[in-house]
Image (tube, rainbow, N blue to C red; front, side, top):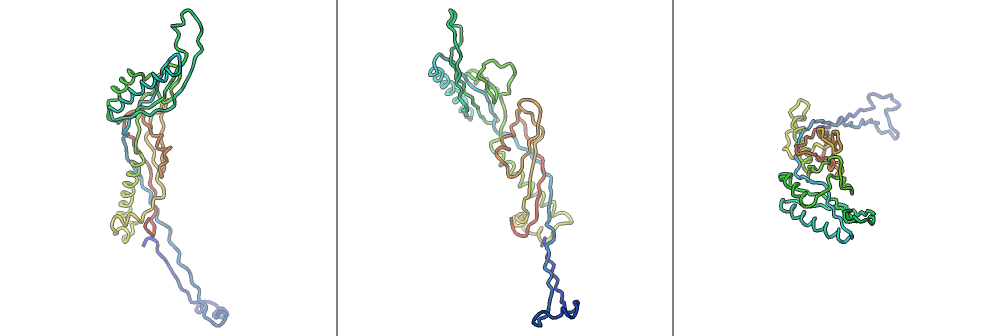
Length: 274
């Protein structure tokens, strides 16, 4: 057993003054020192692993201009239908986000025909595809179909003075990838501890499933390597078990690469299966 119990029974008759030899009523007095549990065993183990994004996302928007809002809506809807066909042909999908409506003031002039229509409708969207597709070919076709706004923060103004990041990579099941890393790290930590001099022979001789159930995860945290951010600079993303959705969604590489995770797992040996 990892936690040993120590008990000691002392007879007061042999060690206490005579006045204390007899308890009230003539019964023999005995002092019982209760057992004390030894400190729990804690294990810290360094872990490393990597995961590769399985989705590539083209972020941007489509717009349509017209004299009347209903005309702009019809044109924009037709463009989106064609974009959905493109996505489906490559095993992807189109996620529609906000739809913006804007109007501009027109002036009565002789050359009014050269002015843009007064009404503009803009649909922010994401085109999500399997990471293995030829994203450049899909992007080129999307531009032909009317993709004219770029990046996650589209603007109503059509002219962009600065380049915008239009492609990024995502994980569809990062929590599952990190759970697998957690389990692998647990196995490594238990095996390493059982091979050391401090191991408890009785515990380490248990079958692997029974042995693993005696080790409780206290904490696990990992961080990524430095990743580029959309607006410049690099950052490392830190995640802690249990993996929160808002933490997972932050890990979004701008380029296609395997993301490395490094961290530490903390285990404690328990008396009962976890």
